[in-house]
Image (cartoon, rainbow, N blue to C red; front, side):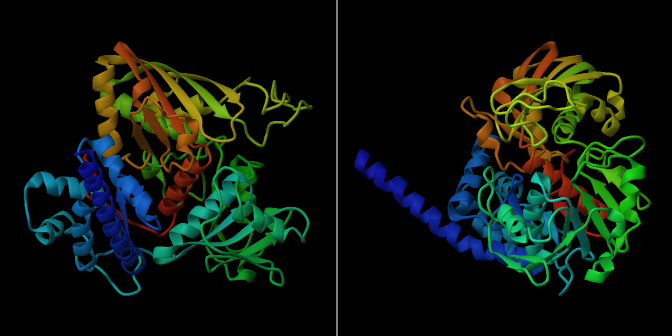
Length: 484
């Protein structure tokens, strides 16, 4: 009997693999021909392997409670290809679960109802907006990850176009810059091909021509000389964090707007996509994407405040060390940060609590914060200790946060995991702003403690790209519509 069961399980696995293999070119057609970006409860299906597609299906059972296989989603994918869709993000997982629960049999009719806004909307050459030139000013950890994401996302419609990177230093460092993009100790190898054009000082990544510009000052660059115009400059250096400093970029020819990948000072808007991105106006020429920690905690704090009300809270960040710290003990202008990062836990300050109030003003004066730098290279943990206006318990609270992660308008920001075995390295490459660890939740009466994991490099960079889309002429519907 056990041998028969073994053969049955293996046969089912092989059948699933075959369907996933058949699904890949159809997903590619949706993406490259229609600029439709399919996912399974927020997990992308574009440029994914057979095994990754099968694992994403398995995630649905853990998160949603309903088993979903490729045999469930494949009929929907086949039908989607025939619907001449306008550009959009489509959550195939939510559609497939809804179709199973509906008891209906006509996939085409179901999809036409659910996606009525985009059915028949395809226009040859129409990709959801006008192309937007992007320049990365600085090419460190965040700059290189942003480059990877922008190159990956350009496959569907060439909308956010990475046209140039600006670096300081010697003119002969092109090969080293390309090598750091090609190989990453944390995030692994670049997915694709990178060629260096020494004669023209450029990097060609997956066919995308990226000019490498050496400059010591933002003012001295003429981007129009490289065919770049009305660009958004993403400043990854952290050298300037106020309007006066960042305005130097606007003095360069070819620049329209600036986005800072650090908390902005003064009156600069600190944007956390999914929370306050609706406040971005056409006249905003300089914006801040806040910090990785602010992006991780604010969506969860908003969800908590909306449902339970927050009286007061303390944010304790257990943060991976950064390039700002020293490998071995040496002088550092910051308190304690001079001590060896790989050998010590280092208590330091964080501005995330105050910055959270900039993105979510209702929390002004309600949060305190501190941080501990720890000897890991990536992935951090925010511990939210909250006093609530309304009582709850761990089970009810987790059910609510799970629903927010799956169905709310913040489903791209809030992820949810329910496992007693996960550790920090399991979240490397996670594209959400933060991941609620359900097994660590503590809630009783009006007190709650939440643990939120976040990839402080990759997850944050995904949030930055979402802001870029909001700032540019790139517009996509997210379907089916969120519940809240």
